[in-house]
Amino acid sequence: MKSEYTRWISPAAIALWVISTGILTFLPGSSLAASSSILSIGALVAFAMAHGRRRFGLKKMFGLFVIAVVLANMFENLSISTGFPFGHYVHTDAFGPKIFQVPAVVGPIFFSLCYIAWTLATMLIGGPESPNDLRFLIGTPIVASFIVTGWDMCSDPIGATIGGQWLFEDGGAYFGVPLSNYLGWYLTTWAIIQTFNIFLAIRWVAPAVVRITYWYEVAIFWAAIGMQYPILLVANPTTSVVYDTGGWAWRSGDILQNATIVSIYTMIAAAVTSALAVTTRYNFLKREILVNQLKGKSISIMGDEYKSLNY
Image (cartoon, rainbow, N blue to C red; front, side, top):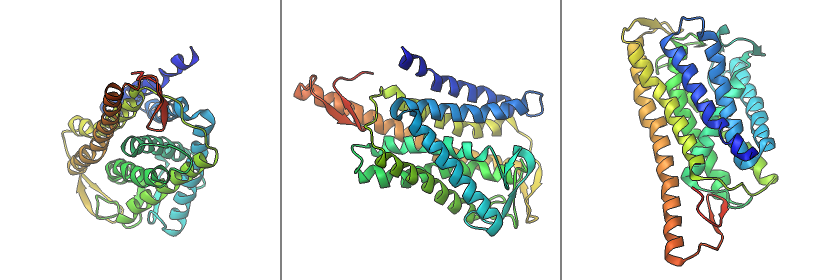
């Protein structure tokens, strides 16, 4: 009963994120906008915690949360002070209270995005089959970091110009954002996910059995997060000139159009590809069962031991 109840938390979190992000998109100046911003971040965290708990348990997910908060704040504060790894930049007060020089919400955002990207990478690569599964241990952080950096390529140009949430010292060639920022994002997210994978290997427990809809939830949520940029473009048909801190002028419509293009061919593409990959694995398993009449035998797929196809 408890498992059936908690299964609905992650879909509910997706719905909450969609509603709160819709308010931010279509009613940015309303009295609901401030609370909707907090709700959208809370929905991301709730989804990652609830979804990950079903397969790995709450303690493991709390471990990822701590890893993400510590490493994200370490790398961001380091970069603000030294320029490594993101470049020289500062956060404005748009995101509220800070931990040293970094908004407190940054760590939870890294946690949520890294979890989703890591799960998408798992759908592509498979595993973990064992604590010594190097394909999973090393492969998923590499792939997941590409996926989550795709989100940052959509988000950061908007925040550095239109939103005024972070400011790079000399601007940057990519709508006010320098190349170093994306190299820093890749490094930071890789460090978070690689550390988590090592943590899982050290404290190894075989992942719980899950239905195929479990995987589809992640793909749907990532696609929804990607779709906010085309919707944002439609919701803002007029364009204006905005400036980065280097003094370069950009058109807001071009920035949003760029985010739309990148989101379709990185974020939504990753969601679709991951969903197709896991569907192919499950269909292969179904054929194997039918051909070899293995209904009563245990078959390993996606790191789980299946005695039947429960989806």
